[in-house]
Length: 88
Image (cartoon, rainbow, N blue to C red; front, side):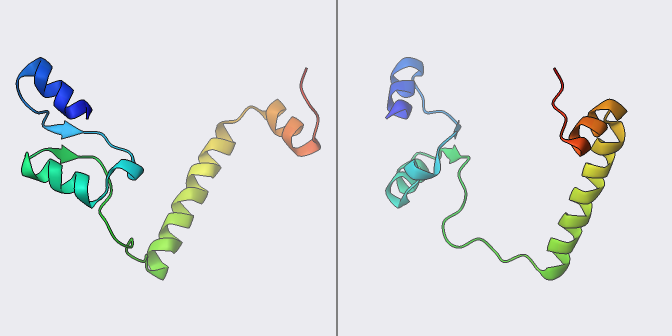
């Protein structure tokens, strides 16, 4: 593992390791926990279900962000986008 190589070079384990989902299985989690190494991966198990109100709030915030982005867009790009004209 790269963490072992890090220890060989620096004499100690890193405090934090960035990992992909595929590598963060139970065995690797246990190995990291034994050595008190934190990781950036998600927790195991099913993700919590968002309530109706949370989904509604996120949609509203996304719509507001899109509106701000659209208002800042120059007028000529709006015309190209709406009329399907490709700028050259």
